[in-house]
Image (tube, rainbow, N blue to C red; front, side, top):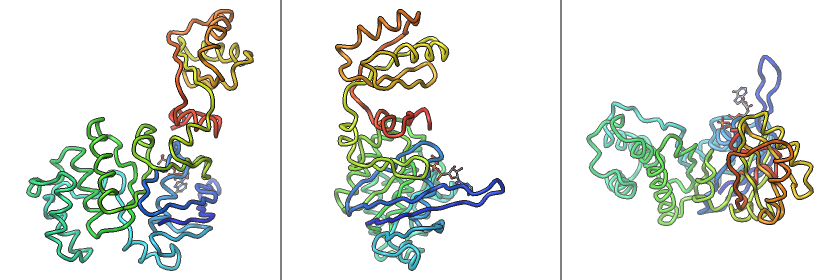
Length: 315
Ligand SMILES: Nc1ncnc2c1ncn2[C@@H]1O[C@H](COP(=O)(O)OP(=O)(O)OP(=O)(O)O)[C@@H](O)[C@H]1O
């Protein structure tokens, strides 16, 4: 569905060239839900804008939904759905009118039937007469997705689909996205800042950092790459965190110690056995943790291992 080779984009600014995307290779198969993950400024939006023809690449090539990005951008546009961050609906226009207008614009055959089917599937029934601006956050996002799916695209791009939604609405939307893939086999390519979303929703993840893909695989594969345990401790302030890091870095059991604010994350081979030694080292350094926990690796830890910095705090 997506096959990109060396896709790159450099912006020319007054202060010089900005290499936003430095050569991205990716292959996304039909029916996959792929999450595109990375901290702020990593190059997610720029890549997405190139794949959806909104921005021309400065180097590289891609085939998207069977069409060449450079030679046939109109073909790409006809074959994809794109739901931008925050959507694009007019808040004053009633839901039913918006759907009908967009269906006409796309020349959707049997449009009343198509709209009814999408509204049933995305839980939008009975909302036709309401202006889009009066919908809840979750309903609005589902309306945006319905609009993106009207012309039955085999590939749907979602830019941060659940940002700003409450946990319940986020979970609901994940269900809808999974159902859509299950029923129509729609391929979904989504960007997200949420690691739980990447973990729960996506079949496969691509992690981008500084314009390059730095890791890819299923969430489980990626987590398996980080062997051992993670010890997370919270201390009083940043100065104490720096002291804790210095003291713990000297322990042979600690492979890596990274500080983010008042939190110190340690990568250790066997957390259960080594915990007592870590506490003694902290004690000797005069640092008293306010909390200490032992956990299995998360996607955050994967990012830390791959790039040497935490994803969430970098974001
Ligand atoms: N039009 C532009 N002109 C100059 N630099 C740009 C432009 N668009 C993006 N950039 C720069 O390119 C880099 C990548 O930006 P991009 O928006 O793709 O990152 P992102 O991963 O989507 O970040 P976010 O999560 O904040 O949306 C950043 O350093 C950004 O400042």
